[in-house]
Structures are given as structure tokens and as C-alpha cells.
Length: 217
Image (cartoon, rainbow, N blue to C red; front, side, top):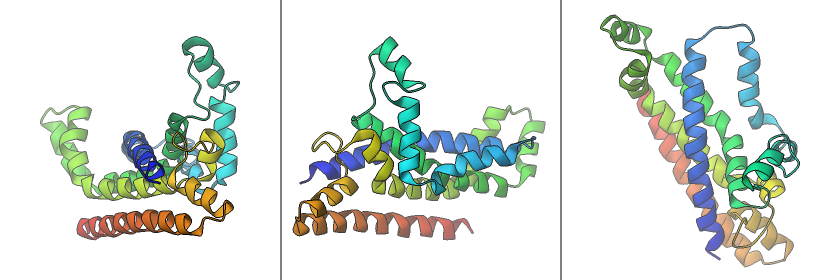
């Protein structure tokens, strides 16, 4: 019964790290640049938040499925197949949680007073040093809150994960899928226990992220 919990924690943690790296990087870049089509790029990055999970899952199958745009080359050149694997679940969770960390990171970087970065540049700091020593430390609370929200979102991912990773007990069955499976099997006790676990974890994450955002202001 604990297998779905440990798998969910593993998938959510790795997905949060991946989405965190991409979201923070894109948030910083988008906060510093103004270019034609920026609104379109922003909309694409936020798209996983509003797309139906099944549509997102279908996009992922088209992209990384065995015969997908990229998946066929992964299979042909490296023998990698991401369908019905926990790694596929990580990719699905990363995509759906990306908008949360991206939006939080961009807003946090935009709140940083640009005079600090300008002062660092006049003292000879390069862009990477400005990011690591000025922008990131000043935006860290908002980013941390976004990471926690992304983690909670990754834990609760269902639709895209089911389409990509399937429902293989002990291999790809995450908590949300295990709840669905228990309900379908009429196992109300197990469904209740799993629901309670994921609810408690998400409440804790939301409380901590809320405190981080309050401390930011």
C-alpha cells in the first residue's frame, strides 16, 4: 500500500527539480527581456495550467511516444522508451507543474529592484554572477513558494500521467492513480487512506508556501 506513496514522492521530487530549473531559468530570462512575441511565449509556458490533462497527455504521446516526434529517435538511437515508465510520469508531472514555478519565479525577479543588478554590473559582475549573487537571493522566497506549489501539483497529477505512464502497480501507479484504482475496485478503505495521505501532504505544502509568500512581503 505504501508503494504508490514512495513512487509519488520520487516522481514529484524529480519533477519539481526539473520544472524548477526550467521555470527559474525561463522566469529570469522573461523578466529581463522584452521582444516581439513575448506574450505568445508566456502563453505557451502557462498552457499546461489550463489545458485538459488528457489533451496534455496526448501531446506528450505525440512528442515522446515510441513513434512520436522525438520518441522515435530516442527508441532508435538509444533504445529509450518513456511510455509506461516512471520516467514518463516524471515528464508528465514536470510539464504540468512548470507554470507554477515559472510564474512565481518571473514575478519574484520582476519585483527585484533593478538598481541592485545595475550596481553589480558597474562593479564588473557578469550576467551569471548578477543572477547568482543578486537576483536569485533577493527572489528566493517567491521561488521557494513556487517550488512547493509545483511539488504539490506534481503529487496530484493524474490525467497526463495515466496516459503516458499507465497504471502498473509498483511501477507507474502514483497516489492519484491508486485512488482511482481503489474506487473502481470498490475498496473504499484504501481509497480513503490514500486520499487522506495526499490531502495532508498538500495542506502542509500550501501552508508553508503561504507563509513564505507572506514573509516575502
